[in-house]
Image 1 (tube, one colour):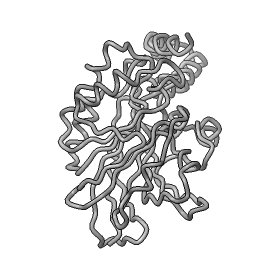
Image 2: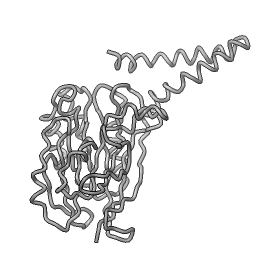
Image 3: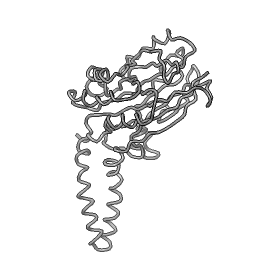
Length: 305
């Protein structure tokens, strides 16, 4: 399998780098130049394989919901997604993500799906047990890789693991809650590619409370009914390109809409919608991240008064 060949074969870079250094030290002038060039060029994918996937960034952003100002009441949440625990052993571990979030003093945590990438189902409980150590309430949905698009449907063991961690699952449902002392409706949609999204719950939502909609794929914004007035959608799925080579990465984004990363003002028939896309902490396809390190988004969201 190509993915695993890259994952394991990439270790050959280290003896290659040693060989290049020996040639730079003891070779003839032309050999030194060629060895230095080979080392410099090969260091880029080596960095993407061995270094960047282990860097965890906390990205801070402030969002004003429609009708809010920078003096309006605010909540502080953490959003992360796409940990893709499984095939690639150097994916950012859940324990480190939890530690970073707990250091941010947030009011709630939102997990935007794609927890797995071809894992051993027997390891799922242990892989995600660290979520129980979060200091704030956890709201979660599953993503396409979790429900079998592609791969095996791991919904049952994942939902069990999330339940053990105390997570509230938001698939096609909504809850009236308090986040940071503010009344908020948290809602969610199942994965778009699974084709089981049902927004019927939206007809019973009370007016006057801000609505946060969590889902995996930001293209969900294209299919949300016009009469569902959510205030902010939170999503993942894109990885921000994962290997963010300028001018090329957009060709490979797995979305139809304009979504890439961070905040989008999406024009829908019902008016402008706010969609925020987190860039994920894991990898699919290739075991690389480049110019797009793993990160959690810390969002200060000002609510309409």
